[in-house]
Length: 159
Image (cartoon, rainbow, N blue to C red; front, side):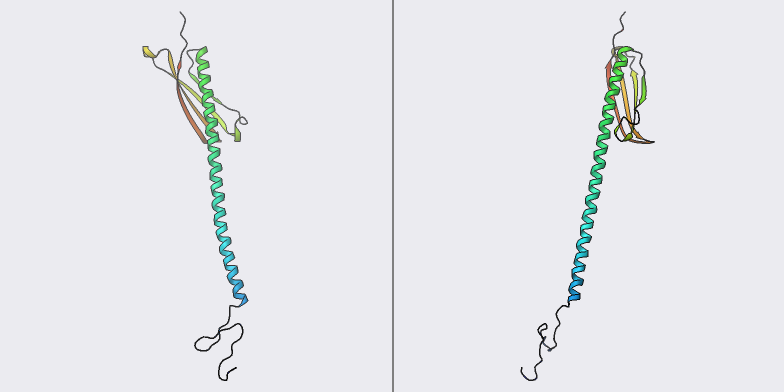
């Protein structure tokens, strides 16, 4: 050692004004590590929330697609029923029927309304227009609706 010069500890270094610097204390290191951990966990929570929200939206879209498919099948059934009824009776005016509660997935109720329209024009007397409207309902709420309009050839009256 030289006389008059400051001594430095192993964990410190001197500055220009010859004051020793302390190294970062272990408690400060733990505080920084904890802060970084909290930031990481916060970001992970945000990403997880986004993923869960995205999955819920995809599930709802799939469910709505399934309901629309069921409604389309019911509409096809309504068209087939209208054609069959017109095959038996040219005076068929239509009807409304409901599916049983346990018949459709999810316990929805299907309401099928068949309305027949005829044109008295001489060119179209051998055709009837069937309008089939299907509603899938959960209580008072309509969750899916489909309308289908078809032209059905009437059987000719034999004279």
